Image (cartoon, rainbow, N blue to C red; front, side, top):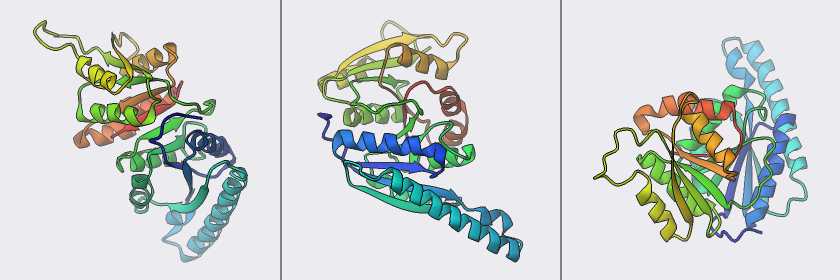
Length: 278
C-alpha cells in the first residue's frame, strides 16, 4: 500500500472495447494502491453524427451506437467486479461538443486521470480527443502503456524547461510521488548559451522538490539525433524511472502540443507511463 495520502479520486477513461480492458485492470490496481475512489467513464463513438443528413441512416446509426454503448459499459462493469475500492461506471457518447463536459464534470474532480495508450483504443482519434479534453481540464493525465503494472511512484523523471506548465508538472509530482521519492529533473539542450553568472537551469526547482522531502537531481542531456521527446523518454527509461512527468505548452501552442510535436512523438513510442500536465 502506498504512503501517499494525496490520491483520493481517480478517473479512468476507456472506450469499453476488448483492447481497453487492460486499462480497466490497471485503473483498478492503481486506485487500490491509494484506497481511492475510482470513476470509469466509458466513451462510445456516436456513429449517428456521420449519418445526420439522412433520417433513416441516422436512426439506424443511433440504434447501433446505443447497442455498442450498452455492450461496452457492461464489459467494463464486469471487468471491475470485485474491485477492492469503490468504482462508479459512467457512459458518454463521444462528440466534440460533449468532451469539454467530460473534462468539466469529471476531470476537475479527480486527482489524476488515467487513459490507455496506443493499442488500448479502437479509434486513435478518440484517444487524442480524450487526452486533449482531460489535459485542458487541468487534471494530471497519465497515459498508460499496456505492459504497465501499477506501483507506488518512488522514482520520477521531470521534463524541465522553466515554463509555467513545467512548474505545474513539478507540483504534480509532489502529489503523485511517494514521500522521499527520487526525482530526476531533466533538461534537454538547455545549456546552449548558458552564462556562468546565471543560475544553472533546473537547480531551483530541484531545490524546491528537495525541500519537500524528495531526492532531486538535475540532469542536462543532449537531444542529438533523437529529438527532445525520444531523449526525455530514453533517459527516463534507462534510469528506471516509474513515470515521466511533462508540462504542456502555453495556450497559444496548445494545439501543437496536444495534437502533434512532443506529445505525439512521446506516445508513438511509449516506453513507460507518461503524465501530462497543462
